Amino acid sequence: MLLVHPVREVLRFLPVLIGVFVAGRSTGGGLWQVTAVVVPVGLGLLRYLTTTFRIHAGRVELRRGLVNRHVLSTPVERVRTVDLTSSLIHRVLGLTTVRIGTGTASSGGDDQLDLDGLPTARAQALRAELLRIAPTGEATGVEHPAAPLAPVDGPPIVSFDLGWLRFAPFTSGGLVIAGAVLGVLTQVGDDLGLFRRLDPESLVRGDRGPTVALIVATVIVVLALISLFAVLGYLVTNWGFALTRPAGGGGAAWQVRRGLLTTRETTLDVDRVAGVVVGEQAGLRLARGRRLAATVTGLDSSQQTSSSLTPPAPTAVVLGAAAQVLGTAAPVRGPLTPHGPAAVRRRWTRALVPAVVLAGGAVVAVVLGAPVWVLAGLAALPAAVLLAVDRCRSLGHALVGGCVVARSGSLTRKRAVLGVDHVIGWNLRATWFQRRVGLTTLVATTAGGSQSVTLLDLPQARAVELAGRAIPELVDQFLVRD
Image (cartoon, rainbow, N blue to C red; front, side, top):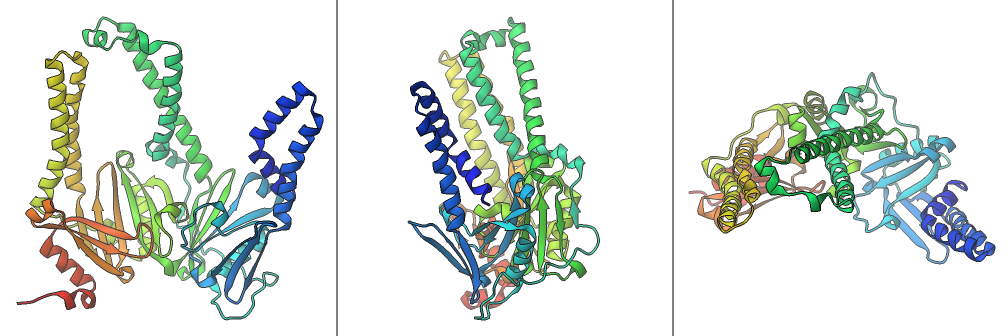
């Protein structure tokens, strides 16, 4: 860490260092150049010398800082996950960063419980200790840590396959890269004056063949670049992925390993896993893929990377992993109960009304003298129809296998599964429009993930009946029976 901390601080001050070196060459200020390097190196050394941690009396404490002392402390019983992360320089030096997830919201890097620069063997033993020991009131020193986690019995439940790279262009990462690439190309095109020479009406008349060819070629190049960068990003992030559980199938934790340059091992306490969320985004569905995340008690949705159980992968692989985590396949493979005709009508209304307004506005604009290409707004109508159909097919719920299951959405569809034992309350809420057609939204609250599982647009009687069947002792006391 005497090497890692100074190098990290130098990289953090790199823009300032470049400015100082450029100014120093023009003014001959060699002393300023030396000082500019010494200061971040000194800060890195100071961070190393003033950072300590201990496990004592059932608590984990992290102290850092000299002038501005910062102390983080949490009970061991609040530990939800333990992440072991090793950047390239950490791996060369045989070091690991231990990130302890406690479910406490943090406002910045200084509020995260990170133990940086532990030897890899010490970090693995500390992970086992944090997830297994119970607070006893006695001091527990890291000099004599608990035994490492039990070895894996047999092959991993899920392991990385190069064939999964085909899902990379259909992920949200691909869309982010697409935005970046389009932004750069737009800026370049504007600098070259391409947009000033482009006449949309000429494309409608069909007398600008070279322009059409240029647009088609640009689209092809952009799609190729998006796919390439998405595949590279997927490969770097998920290389060597493995989802395992300690020997015998009765281990206390799920372990996820991934990463090519920076490796990361995440350990989830089995007792804290309240359910799973199967991501079924439109792009992944087209490629016949899914992704899986765990709902972990005490971890909110901002800590999603610590609860991810599989990357985008084939549907059969993801559903198989979900069945292993839940102990049953029924919640993720079983049929769902539809929400009825009133809910279907709401899907159609909410999809078509904006599209009709947009299409009507485009027609009126052209009649009033706008360019003909404005009629492209009419494409909103078939798009809205497809969206409504997909949203109707997606909407459903179930109470099976001791779990509440809810599915909704289209472009970002997901199937959320929550164990009934982890439901801590029910909310029934209805807007004025929902009350007019006898619908309500049933929300199962929990202490992990997004803090709830939402069943949209259920008939009110069915929502009450479902909540009563799931937790009778909670709901029955509020029912008035004939």
